[in-house]
Image (tube, rainbow, N blue to C red; front, side, top):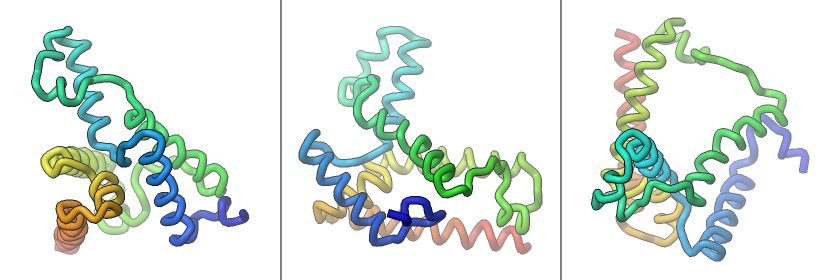
Length: 173
């Protein structure tokens, strides 16, 4: 069990644990693991707070009610788990601009935050457009051998590779 305290867990152990988590989720909840719907629900909760109950009349929110559910709690657990993992491995530190970023783009925080927010927005938009995120398609859908999930996963990887090439090409001028 020493591997639990390592900075990086063995890939086989992580893959096995994710597979077991997926099996438990299907057995107990009859639902696949996914994250993007939780963000849509959160936006609905914000809209409901600002605009009132008229939000619930929208077709989208009838399909995905703005409530705190198991998926929302799962998403909440992601940063909590990352924090506990970093603390238990002794690698926890607060770092606004990672050293790799500093080496390529410089120490400025404004560009880092702008890029992170733009990337997050586009990833969220793409996840809703694709009908699922990397967890929903890449793990759950692929596990069920859904062709759409295999295609979406290939698109995720291609988009990530192209984004990295573009960012690092721009950085080198």
